[in-house]
Structure formats: C-alpha cells, structure tokens
Length: 328
Ligand code: AQP
Image (spheres, rainbow, N blue to C red):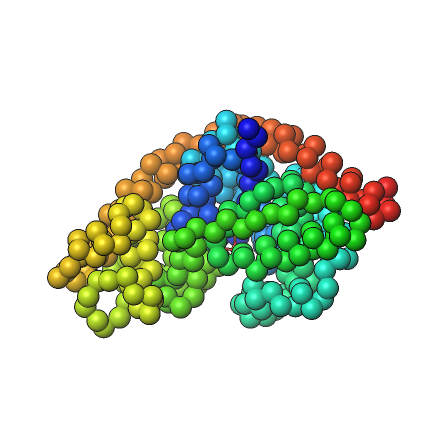
C-alpha cells in the first residue's frame, strides 16, 4: 500500500523554540514511518520580514541542522531549502491570481505581523499564504502537520486548490491539516495569552532548543502563572495550563497521573520537574546539533539531494498548472 504524503515547513527567522518543536517538528519526527515525508526550510517566506542576508543564510543552515538533530531521518524523509526550487515562487504567482482579495484580507497572521513590523508592511507579507499554498500544492500532499496558527492559511490553500480544480480541471490534491491534540499552540512563558514565537522580544518568552540547562530552569522559574494553588488542567488558567501541556507531551503521562503527581505541591515543584524534563529532552538534540552543524559538506549534500529528489514532483505540478491556465 502506498503511504500518504505529508509536507511541512519552518521559517529560518530566528531560533527554533519549544512551540515549533511540540506543535510541528516533534510530530514530523514521530510520524516519519507512517508517511512519505517532505520537509522544507522556508527561507523565501522569511524575507517577508527584513532579514540580514548573511544572517538569513546562516540561520537557514542552522535550522536544517537542527531538524536533523531533532530526528528527521533522511532515509525516511526528504529535507530541502525552499529557495532551491523555483517552482514555489512561480506557482505562488498563479495562485495569487486566483485568490480573492477578501479571502486574503481575512488572514489574522498578516494583521498580527503588520502590527509587529509597522515599518515594513510589504506585499509579500500580505501574500504569504499564497506562497504557503504553493509549497503544499506543488507536492500533491495528503496531510500538512502544522501548529494551530497555520490552520487559517491551510484553509485558504484548500479553497484556492478546490476553486482551481473546479475552474480548470483536476490539478491539485486537496490537503488536510494535521494539528496535534495537545501542543498545537504553546504559549509564551512571559505572557500566556500570546503564542510562543521566534520573533517575540521578551527575555523569558520562549525556550529555545539550544538553551542551556541553567537558562531553561531560569525561564521556567519566571514563567507567569496565577495566584491560585491547585495544579490541575484548567484552560481558564492559561499560564498553568501551558506548563502542564508541555509536561504532558514530554512525559507521555495522562492528565490524571500528572494531577495526582502534583497534588498538594506548589508551582515551584511543577516548574522544577518541567525544567528537568525539557533539559533531558533537549540534551540529545543539542549534542546531535553540535555534531551535525560542524559537518558542512554533509549538510550541503543532504539539502542538495533533498531538492533533487522532489524537484520533479514540483515541476510536474507547475507545468500542469501552466498548461491549464494557458501559459504552456
Ligand atoms: N507557539 C507555537 N505552538 C505550536 N506550534 C507552533 N508553531 C509556531 N509557533 C507555535 C508551528 O511551528 C511551525 C513552524 O512555524 P514557522 O517557522 O513557519 O513560523 P511561525 O508559525 O510564524 O512561528 P513563529 O515561531 O511565531 O515565528 P515568527 O516569530 O518568525 O513568526 C508551524 O507549523 C507552526 O504552526
């Protein structure tokens, strides 16, 4: 039986954090055997926010090393860099011409990011979802494993694909979101009302995958909770719920087991236990990262081969699209 195909991407816009890991990367790694996997460092998306060119290139390779360090196995998965395949940007243009302004204007990420970057609200930032739709539709994928924040973009990708198929004839497979039940939206430790984000400023906002044990302990100690005392899964207590969710995913324990583990104990206990679990989870990832990142030749060959393998799929879809709209 042929395996279903998944595609997902991550931006080299900063340091990868626990939200990216739990909401996306961990799931990519855990389900590698089940699927035919295509993963991508989406550097073309990253320039929707102004980047230092040298830093962008450095971050792109660091992120690719980190994905391998997290357990992306090139024997089971394809890993490449978005800008190495020109069809992403080219298909995005054709899709742009088929997405109503009204649909695009509803995207909440554009609104959030324009507020965060008022000096550079560019057309690319607005069109970001068309490029994301192209990333996915090029590879005729079944499922897209992403965090909750990408759900709206994925709906737009599905809509444009269905509209295109209806108007021009069958071209794109309609992808489905694959959003984890827990961890789909890890919140900032300093502000549990906002999602953990690479580009947020606060010193204690995010746990980065390369943070040292001391830094991880310090950030959890400072994590915002509330003035109550019981340690229970209660969504209305956002800070506590966030910490418990991270603990739940990383320990694999049930909610009942966790609540009884911390019964009668204070937030300090939870924060210490959580820091230990995160430190132990990240220890092998950090060791792998430092080893892989030194092997520049190896990394470049992985990414080159990755692009070589998937380019024919991208090209076939793009050529079909061009033909259907009368461009070929
Ligand atoms: N806080 C989060 N909780 C769960 N999942 C998350 N993801 C991002 N933040 C969280 C998921 O990580 C994947 C890669 O994200 P991205 O690099 O494409 O960019 P993003 O969603 O815009 O992530 P950031 O960290 O907030 O980056 P910046 O600050 O650059 O915008 C996606 O699957 C995403 O859902």
